[in-house]
Structure formats: structure tokens, C-alpha cells
Length: 206
Length: 206
DNA sequence: ATGTTCATACCAACTAATCGGTATGGTGTC
DNA sequence: GACACCATACCGATTAGTTGGTATGAACAT
Image (cartoon, rainbow over all chains, first blue to last red; front, side, top):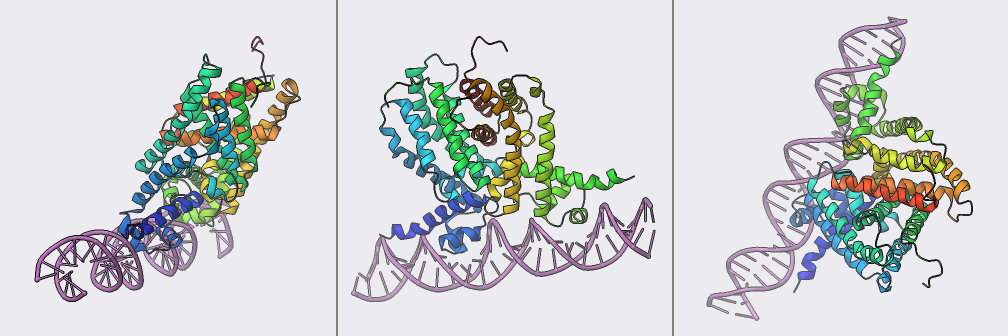
């Protein structure tokens, strides 16, 4: 079966789109850019996707699936303590901020900034993609809340969004500085907030 | 003197650029878009600015000056306690998240996302513009730190960037949701972090 | 096996529209 | 008449998308 061969071009185009859009944004990324990076021609592009918009939507969908798998396999899930998993998540995100900026920044965050008002379909996928990711965090947040601060006034959802906001904001500064250092230090504050919020006793064993 | 008249078109173009770019991003914003919103012709545009890039740089510079003036006049500066000023700043930013998204989001954050790798001049202005704003916050952070937690391990600068990261990230979710509610709730967490960080005694008078 | 049929995948060349930018000329003010 | 300011018409380059066609291989009858 040549199924793999047949789909190779499509996969290459989706991956290329994800990478270039994260670096240049949606509008500045041309169809020719994507084709060149993928090593295919425009004819192939419009065979697999009926428009640039269509490709972007599929690329965003695939991005969501891919990243969910990526974080599902991440090492921080091994911890038995839900708070440790949350802290581990933040530490993991700090740890992966190495190499090129485009490699660790988020397609959803980049996309939605410039499309929220003009491309409703793209906006919705970014919204639901980020919300899906936050939903996985919310499980640990809920457990940690029940365990450490069951009487807390803040909602589980809002903390999930706050964590993700701090991350997305950190990416913006990584881009502005063309350096991840400041962004990493910001995420240390995020980690510190979680520690303070759940009032983790200082003498507790890790 | 007709100085004001002469500069009216230029001012209109700068303001139009700031508003449209915040809604659609840099690349998706066309020169014609800006001219139409400003109510002037292309001839006027290229009389005042030698290129779209040039206009964007001037618009970003003016944005920085304008926002610094805006925050300088904001009511939270009245508080004598530096921590209260910091909390007041966050509350102020929550309060102004009303009306259209383009009205309260940040030009720098939107711009730098899609230009950091391709337009170095724009990137630098966004970087220094945001850093200048953070520098004003750092004064209050430093005072609060000396007053409440002089032995704290975190740096003044890093907290300034964290506050701004949380804000920029909140804007992304306001765009993704086309609604400021989630973003506001995120900023309540930011406020809570500041309160926890400085260990504000519960029985202290406001 | 072999030839026919058909759909999928792909390609190079093209098109219509839009982009940033220019050329040129007009108008009001000093 | 010199100059800043602005309007209109235009230009070359680039854009997303189209065209007409080829290569490949699976399905099936012979």
C-alpha cells in the first residue's frame, strides 16, 4: 500500500504551515512559503486543501492533537501528588524553552492574535484547542484544590486559564527579547504562585 | 498657525494604524485600510511616511508615549502604599477591559508576535516600549519589596515582566473567547499572587 | 500475465486581484 | 514662486487560487 506515500505531502504541508505560521504569523505566511518548506508544488497544495484558510484549520486541528499527545507523555504525570504534577507541568514548560523560538511557542496563541476578528473558524479552533489543553490541567488543579485548599474562593477553571495566560504572555516576551531567559523567569513566578496558593508546607518532603 | 491642521492627517493615520493593527495584525492591515479609516488618500499617506514599515514604527513610538501618559494619570497612583499601587494597577487594567477588544489590547504585544523574526526595527520598539512600561511598575515593586519582603529571592525585574506576561496572555484569551470575562478572572489571580507574595496581613487596614 | 479503466496525487504555467509604492499634477499659504 | 499637503492614476511585484495535463497504481476483465 502506498497510503504513506500518498499522505506524505499533506503531512509535510501541515507541519510546514505550523512552523512558518508560528514564526511569521498567518497573513505573512504565503502558500508559496509553505510549499517551498514542504518541498511540494502549489498544485499539490490545492489538491489537498481547498484554500489557505482550510489548510490553516487542518493544521491547527492537527496541532491540538499532536500537543495533547506530547503533554500526555511528559514526565511530570508520574508524581502522585496533584500539586507536584502542576508544578511539574510548569517546570516542564520551562525546560522545553530551548532552541529556536518557533519550536516551543504555541500555534494557537500566535494564530488567534491576528485572526480573532477576521477568521471566525480559525478563532474557534484556537479557542477550543487551548481550552482542551486547559481541561487536562484542570483535573490536577481540582485534585490539588481538594487536597490543599478545599475552601478556596477561586474557580478551577480560572486558575487553568491563568496558567495558560502566563505561558502565552511569556512567549510574547521571548519573541520581543528574542531570548527565553526573561520568559523563563516569569514562569518561575507562576510556579511560585502555585506554591503559595496551595500553601505547601515548607518542611514537606518532595 | 496651521500646525495642528497640517498634522491632523498624520495623527489620523497613526491612530488608524494603531487601531487596525491591534485588530488584524501588521501584515493583514493594508495601507488602503489605514487610509480609509483615517479618511485620507494614499498620496497623503506616502507624503507623511516613506513606507508602511515607517508608519508602523512611528505608530508604535507614539503608542508608547500615549500609553505612558495614560497610565501616569491613572487613579491608582494616589495610594501611599506601594503594594496598594501595584494592586491598583492590576485592578485598573481589569477595569478598562470593557467595550471592544481592540480598545484595551496592546499594540506592542500584537505587533511583536508576527514581526519578531522578520522586522527587527519593529521588534525592538515593541521590546523597549514594553520594557519602559515595566520600568514604571518596577518602582512600586521595589518599594513594596523593601517594605514587605526585603529578603525575597525573586528579582524586581522578573516580577515586572511576569505581571506584564499575565496581562498579554489575558489579552490572547480575550481574543480567543471574543469576551473579556475569562481574561479578567485571570487577572484576579495575578492580583492574588501579589497579595500572597507580599504576605499582606489580613487584619491590616486598607 | 496483460490491457483497460479509473481515481488519486502531483506538477508547471497561468490568471485575476491585491499589495506597497510612485508619478504627476493640483491647491492653498507664505 | 516655493513649499507643504494632498489627490488621482498608475506600476511592478506578489498574492491566492486555477488550469490542463501527467504519473502512478489499484481494480477488474480477459
